[in-house]
Length: 505
Ligand code: BES
Ligand code: ZN
Ligand code: ZN
Image 1: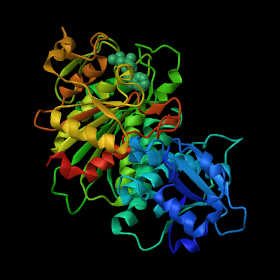
Image 2: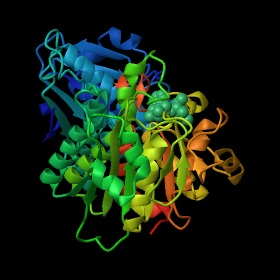
Image 3: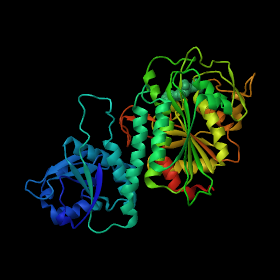
């Protein structure tokens, strides 16, 4: 979808459909709509259906001009109760509105800036949210369908209508929203596409395409080299698969801030998790193609960095491999030598995420990062604890956890902290090695974090996100569609935008 500004007086507005946002339980239409009705669209005031429109969240009503005015239709998109307002609501409402436009096979939809008047948030924030909702809400993955494909070309254009030249922040908002959306869509496509297509080599290819398009540096480490370098945990997980693994390192150096310590983002890239020798049950096993959603979110972030030419040194580390059973697969009881030097006893080959991540975290040290962020579909236990709409956040600085949690709340990616207290460490002590990769079922999401914590030096701020629940939505919920969510992409970019608030170097 193309996004276009049109600057003219409301009397000259012309569009196949005009979108307005309407809160619930308010007797009067909102400011912008009210003004437009009174000055330019008397017909709408006379439409009895307008009185019936309730403004429930994601409700959309279409009103038709009985005459032949320049705006044949108005779409009112519900925002829900005004007391519950959050910018996220605009994302949901815009997504619903644009989907309606597609259903009606409209070529263009227009969104007047006055639609945001009177809302309790800044115009730039509102516009960014709405454009993000519009673009991500229309997204569908049908690359593999050969019949019954819904046309994706509607609407082709989203016009942003303004009466005068908008202030710079508002001008920039749709550009940023589009950039973030393309990162989210990339992450979603990679996650939903099947594991026979999205192999570690495919992810390396995606990283290469990004590197070529935007000038990032790329290093892809193969199995032999990883083993020689001492990444015994990553190599152990990879050795059971016939599909070659790829330990991908993508680096975005920015000239102006090149001297600053980088942000290092680590994403779990298990392109398919069978559980290995500790084989998973067959039920819903197909869903384990999503076990690379962390890596996909990191690639999504790099798409955003490239599109926005963001000035900040960022390194992405993606340990990518399948986790398969087989004659060469690693086994429960094996002891692995990790890059950090610690030895790890394998209790379950299904706790493979922490094994590939621990070598990636150790590898991250060489960049002297200002912050290491890892993102992983790590534990089913995180879904038990927090559900499908909230990710677990853990880290080695409590205040940092809180600040990042707040950023997540602001942009609609919910995070909730789990403690990494020392008392949990006892349960991963091993009889034969330094630590083991699994304890019992107790506090399993926390234990994942406690394990990873062993591989990050205290002096480096580190955050771990468990997105086992949020990477995939079983049904349409909130601003997330059914299927892969692209969770993390927006959060990461937002952290870069608000870097100063994080109190890091
Ligand atoms: N990839 C899974 C976690 C997962 C579960 C992701 C559901 C997405 C949805 C992970 O590698 C795993 O298998 N975890 C085990 C726990 C581990 C401690 C053995 C699990 O969730 O049971
Ligand atoms: Zn597993
Ligand atoms: Zn896994």
